Image (cartoon, rainbow, N blue to C red):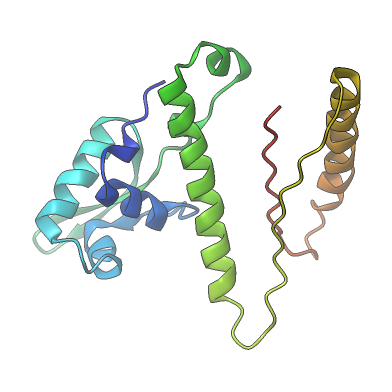
Length: 170
Protein backbone atom coordinates (compact mmCIF):
# COMPACT_ATOMS: atom_id res chain seq x y z
CA UNK A 1 0.00 0.00 0.00
CA UNK A 2 1.49 3.31 -1.06
CA UNK A 3 -0.31 6.65 -1.00
CA UNK A 4 1.00 9.17 -3.46
CA UNK A 5 -2.21 11.18 -3.57
CA UNK A 6 -1.06 13.91 -1.24
CA UNK A 7 2.15 14.98 -2.93
CA UNK A 8 0.53 18.33 -3.58
CA UNK A 9 -2.68 20.32 -3.59
CA UNK A 10 -3.44 19.62 -7.27
CA UNK A 11 -3.83 15.87 -6.70
CA UNK A 12 -5.93 16.54 -3.64
CA UNK A 13 -8.29 18.77 -5.68
CA UNK A 14 -8.53 16.19 -8.47
CA UNK A 15 -9.39 13.43 -6.00
CA UNK A 16 -12.03 15.61 -4.32
CA UNK A 17 -13.77 16.13 -7.66
CA UNK A 18 -13.69 12.41 -8.48
CA UNK A 19 -15.01 11.08 -5.16
CA UNK A 20 -18.37 9.32 -5.68
CA UNK A 21 -18.24 9.82 -9.46
CA UNK A 22 -18.44 6.18 -10.54
CA UNK A 23 -18.93 7.20 -14.20
CA UNK A 24 -15.77 9.26 -13.93
CA UNK A 25 -14.84 12.59 -15.43
CA UNK A 26 -12.75 13.44 -18.46
CA UNK A 27 -9.79 15.81 -18.39
CA UNK A 28 -12.02 18.41 -20.09
CA UNK A 29 -14.70 18.05 -17.40
CA UNK A 30 -12.10 18.28 -14.65
CA UNK A 31 -10.66 21.37 -16.37
CA UNK A 32 -14.10 23.04 -16.23
CA UNK A 33 -14.41 22.23 -12.52
CA UNK A 34 -10.85 23.11 -11.55
CA UNK A 35 -10.47 26.44 -13.32
CA UNK A 36 -7.42 27.41 -11.23
CA UNK A 37 -5.36 24.50 -12.61
CA UNK A 38 -3.92 24.80 -16.14
CA UNK A 39 -5.02 21.98 -18.43
CA UNK A 40 -1.45 20.76 -19.04
CA UNK A 41 -0.83 20.54 -15.26
CA UNK A 42 -4.13 18.75 -14.77
CA UNK A 43 -3.32 16.26 -17.54
CA UNK A 44 0.14 15.58 -16.06
CA UNK A 45 -1.23 14.93 -12.54
CA UNK A 46 -4.13 12.77 -13.73
CA UNK A 47 -1.67 10.62 -15.71
CA UNK A 48 0.64 10.32 -12.70
CA UNK A 49 -2.28 9.37 -10.44
CA UNK A 50 -3.38 6.78 -13.02
CA UNK A 51 0.15 5.33 -13.22
CA UNK A 52 0.29 5.19 -9.39
CA UNK A 53 -2.97 3.18 -9.38
CA UNK A 54 -4.94 5.91 -7.61
CA UNK A 55 -7.21 6.49 -10.60
CA UNK A 56 -8.71 4.10 -13.11
CA UNK A 57 -10.21 4.59 -16.55
CA UNK A 58 -13.90 3.69 -16.40
CA UNK A 59 -14.80 4.39 -20.03
CA UNK A 60 -13.51 5.82 -23.27
CA UNK A 61 -15.46 7.97 -25.70
CA UNK A 62 -14.60 8.60 -29.35
CA UNK A 63 -14.14 12.24 -30.30
CA UNK A 64 -13.29 14.00 -33.55
CA UNK A 65 -9.67 14.29 -32.51
CA UNK A 66 -9.27 10.80 -31.03
CA UNK A 67 -10.44 9.22 -27.81
CA UNK A 68 -11.40 10.76 -24.47
CA UNK A 69 -10.79 8.81 -21.24
CA UNK A 70 -12.99 9.13 -18.15
CA UNK A 71 -11.22 8.73 -14.83
CA UNK A 72 -12.56 7.66 -11.44
CA UNK A 73 -11.05 6.98 -8.05
CA UNK A 74 -9.61 3.47 -7.87
CA UNK A 75 -11.26 2.51 -4.58
CA UNK A 76 -9.06 -0.59 -4.23
CA UNK A 77 -6.12 1.77 -3.84
CA UNK A 78 -7.72 3.34 -0.78
CA UNK A 79 -9.00 0.31 1.09
CA UNK A 80 -6.99 -1.30 3.81
CA UNK A 81 -7.60 -4.46 5.80
CA UNK A 82 -6.63 -5.04 9.43
CA UNK A 83 -3.35 -6.81 8.60
CA UNK A 84 -2.27 -4.04 6.21
CA UNK A 85 -3.14 -1.45 8.86
CA UNK A 86 -0.96 -3.25 11.42
CA UNK A 87 1.96 -3.36 8.99
CA UNK A 88 1.55 0.18 7.64
CA UNK A 89 4.02 2.88 8.55
CA UNK A 90 2.96 5.98 10.42
CA UNK A 91 3.11 8.03 7.18
CA UNK A 92 0.94 5.49 5.34
CA UNK A 93 -1.62 5.60 8.15
CA UNK A 94 -1.67 9.40 8.11
CA UNK A 95 -2.23 9.35 4.35
CA UNK A 96 -5.07 6.87 4.74
CA UNK A 97 -6.71 8.94 7.49
CA UNK A 98 -6.31 12.03 5.29
CA UNK A 99 -8.14 10.28 2.45
CA UNK A 100 -10.88 9.31 4.88
CA UNK A 101 -11.37 12.91 5.98
CA UNK A 102 -11.17 14.10 2.40
CA UNK A 103 -14.04 11.74 1.58
CA UNK A 104 -16.09 13.11 4.52
CA UNK A 105 -15.34 16.69 3.42
CA UNK A 106 -16.56 15.93 -0.10
CA UNK A 107 -19.70 14.23 1.23
CA UNK A 108 -20.44 17.34 3.31
CA UNK A 109 -19.83 19.64 0.34
CA UNK A 110 -22.20 17.55 -1.82
CA UNK A 111 -24.83 17.63 0.92
CA UNK A 112 -24.47 21.37 1.44
CA UNK A 113 -24.90 22.06 -2.27
CA UNK A 114 -28.32 20.35 -2.17
CA UNK A 115 -29.62 22.40 0.76
CA UNK A 116 -30.85 25.50 -1.03
CA UNK A 117 -33.03 27.31 1.52
CA UNK A 118 -33.35 24.25 3.77
CA UNK A 119 -31.74 24.12 7.21
CA UNK A 120 -28.41 22.33 7.56
CA UNK A 121 -29.06 19.34 9.85
CA UNK A 122 -25.51 17.98 9.91
CA UNK A 123 -23.93 17.47 13.31
CA UNK A 124 -20.36 17.18 14.46
CA UNK A 125 -19.09 16.38 17.92
CA UNK A 126 -16.00 15.30 19.74
CA UNK A 127 -16.31 13.44 23.03
CA UNK A 128 -13.45 12.41 25.22
CA UNK A 129 -14.49 9.47 27.38
CA UNK A 130 -12.53 8.10 30.32
CA UNK A 131 -12.95 4.34 29.91
CA UNK A 132 -11.07 1.29 31.11
CA UNK A 133 -10.10 -1.40 28.59
CA UNK A 134 -13.20 -3.58 29.14
CA UNK A 135 -15.52 -0.54 29.15
CA UNK A 136 -13.91 0.63 25.90
CA UNK A 137 -14.38 -2.80 24.31
CA UNK A 138 -18.04 -2.80 25.43
CA UNK A 139 -18.51 0.69 24.00
CA UNK A 140 -17.10 -0.39 20.64
CA UNK A 141 -19.26 -3.51 20.64
CA UNK A 142 -22.42 -1.52 21.47
CA UNK A 143 -21.58 1.01 18.77
CA UNK A 144 -21.01 -1.78 16.26
CA UNK A 145 -24.39 -3.36 17.16
CA UNK A 146 -26.15 -0.01 16.75
CA UNK A 147 -24.62 0.65 13.34
CA UNK A 148 -25.46 -2.88 12.14
CA UNK A 149 -29.06 -2.46 13.30
CA UNK A 150 -29.57 0.68 11.22
CA UNK A 151 -27.37 -0.46 8.34
CA UNK A 152 -29.85 -3.21 7.48
CA UNK A 153 -32.73 -0.70 7.58
CA UNK A 154 -30.82 1.57 5.21
CA UNK A 155 -31.21 -0.96 2.42
CA UNK A 156 -34.82 0.24 1.99
CA UNK A 157 -35.10 2.02 -1.39
CA UNK A 158 -37.51 4.60 0.02
CA UNK A 159 -34.94 5.95 2.46
CA UNK A 160 -32.39 8.66 1.75
CA UNK A 161 -28.70 7.84 2.01
CA UNK A 162 -27.03 9.41 5.05
CA UNK A 163 -23.33 9.44 5.84
CA UNK A 164 -22.32 8.52 9.37
CA UNK A 165 -18.63 8.97 10.12
CA UNK A 166 -16.88 7.81 13.26
CA UNK A 167 -13.25 7.98 14.24
CA UNK A 168 -12.16 6.30 17.43
CA UNK A 169 -8.73 7.10 18.78
CA UNK A 170 -8.09 4.68 21.63
